Length: 71
Image 1: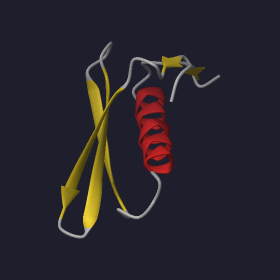
Image 2: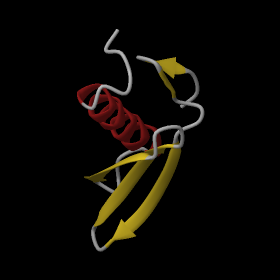
Image 3: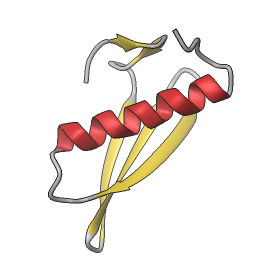
Image 4: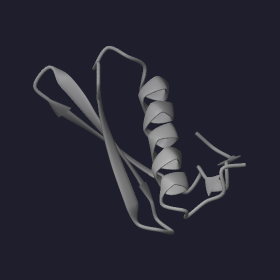
């Protein structure tokens, strides 16, 4: 996912996919603030869908912590 969303430069977000049994763990890290979030999803879901979900969670956490604007 490339671009800027709610003050977060999504082209810089680090995404990691790790298979854990019958699930897929997706971790998103903002390199600027070093905030990290994870989701666990269906390994049959598309990589793009899982990545977007992890980035949305990262945005949510950054907004809650006051590190980006909610605009």
